[in-house]
Length: 117
Image 1: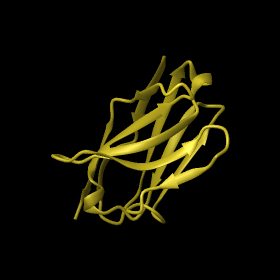
Image 2: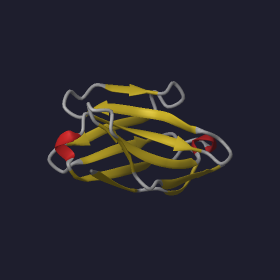
Image 3: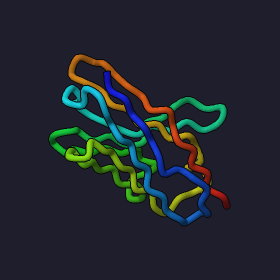
Image 4: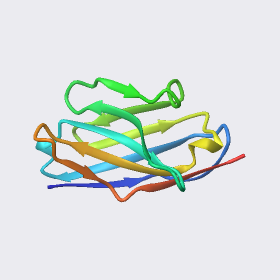
């Protein structure tokens, strides 16, 4: 099992920045990739960004390209999401996800990000 704990959410004005963190614990050696997803009220959970745990390959949703940066610190078993130029439409609960080569998948509890106009 892998446990994920997110932090760093909050209330910010449009144009501002936040950095989310996700600390992984447990069987972290089984993690193949990690990513961020978000879910706005009344909407489905959407992909935001992902990074391979070993190779550093990154992928982003078109809506966040150029504004968000995903990174990881393997020593600290921590995943980050730097969010710049935030927009009201970025308001959502942000979830950290980890997955393994055996298709196991784990989720954090989520952290709320609210962007005011």
